[in-house]
Image (cartoon, rainbow, N blue to C red):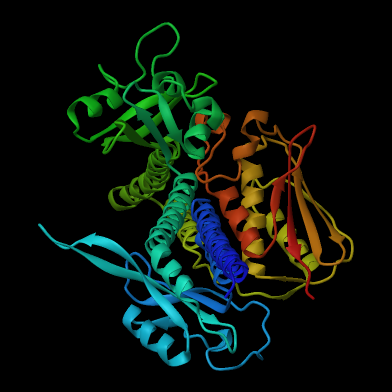
Length: 533
């Protein structure tokens, strides 16, 4: 070999070495870039459903794999479930051994996943995390399994196998972090839904008594917007200290500060203030929140409805007691006269008639209370049948004309289709309306009953009088239980305040409505009944 040939061989050797060095550097650069790309994906903070397919696509691109799949366990369970799979464009047909369509949905553990991968021609690595195993010990727990399959006719490069081995810990941490983020977001969403859906007001404050969180019920309680409460002091938002000083009902110290100082839960009834300076009674419970930063939370229940119901109950007891006492006193008085006085026949008959009237009054009151009880418990049974409403109204007017002291009733009804109602209950509605007029319209009042057909499925009956009418401020309450107008409460006219309430519930039980009409004089009530179809 000449010196020139030796020199040429040396140059060729150096060129091969340079090429190998360049290729190795290129591979290292590609590996570093691939790891950088993967790190960027893992650090993106995306949810698992978005992150997992992106990671599989990057690993498949880097390794030249034909398929990739990922199984993960939840933080609470060891069973591995498939969360993502990838089958890039490839030459071999779909449906071959180990195809994505045939990937197992789950494995009992990573060992079972490894056995499946070996049989199906996949290469896989378990994804593990460190966990403490009691005092002084630690171990690794598999939380997932990542598997790839080379393209047909190709083998997995050793450096790609090393690459998966290098990144599997980073993958495990990222996937577990994504799972925990997802669980945290779901817990937050659930907590927010519970908080916002609660009917009681919930308010959280920091150690300085400034509101950090409140729900919609808290804002509605005081009539303010939620955004106005965040950052405000509890006393300003709840109006605990009204203008001019004093205290609405928090006690000597702020209950929030009290539970923050002593840590003991606190339950009390107090008064808070609305934006319109109204005083709102509430039942409040306070507790200190654990963790950092420190704070306290209160749950406030509006007592206005409860107290209004208590007032209704008290009113009902008082009304019923009064209504029962009067006929009982009459029965007692008349029976004592019959027992101890030597009365002639006409006088005895008078006393017996008065006893009969009192018994009828007691029976009507008991029936009214029973009807209310059935209506409240939805146990009222309607005996519905096709009914000639015109004939029913005429019969009712005829009956009323025979009653002593009953107001005159005029009937203005055209021909009407039959209605699908319980005739006895509709007569009860008409009787209650007539009794209401007789009691409250004043002497000399007259009644007009009108009816009209509202095609296709309704008949509206209007019961109007030309009496004294009702106070405009009380119109919204006329169909409420136990309600009696102020003028009636001050009079000696008997009544339980249930008549119009029973009318409303009976009409609604038929699928209709009842309302108070606008009139210049007297009172007009209209109600709808369904036409027979």
